[in-house]
Length: 222
Picture 1: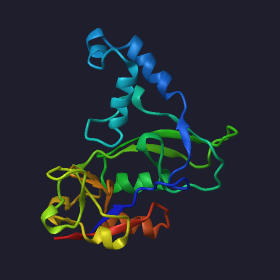
Picture 2 (picture 1 turned 135 degrees about the vertical axis):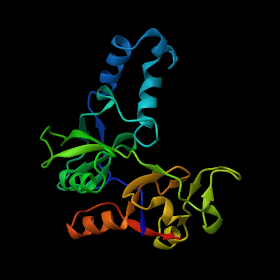
Picture 3 (picture 1 turned 180 degrees about the vertical axis):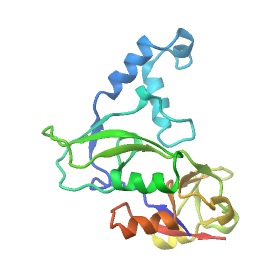
């Protein structure tokens, strides 16, 4: 069975309001001091263009983040008493708590990229429990548009979207089980929404441990 996450789009435990601390300065420093003239020219000699390219790595198949590209601190604009085990932060970067990281790495050792990221409350205290930035590093092409009900940005486009966030909408999306067999966490190359997918085994272990992740629904597998 394949599950698709419903992207959290309202501020809350799965999408805290906030910003990375020091990220812009960190990337600009690397751009100005470490990059060659040829490398800078590839980004029109503008550090903002480089920073935008780095942000695309959060969700696209563009390779792992380099050490200087990894945000290390996320400061929330509003105090929160709780957060989910999986949260979306600035520029759609995902972060997970220690339990979910351990589950994912047990099922798929060495596949995805993790690094420590501090979650800071507005007054400066660190949110309890370690969190880790996560870049999903598995991309599949299992979507079957011929057997699905979907939306597109334009006719003939190779980007597909669910019609809505409901269980019925997700159930109208069809994926090939033979392509996703053995995978536990991934993104699809053509199916843009939902954009995070979980195996039955991963979803079951999350449920067994009582972890909280965003709402998710089953897709049709053939």
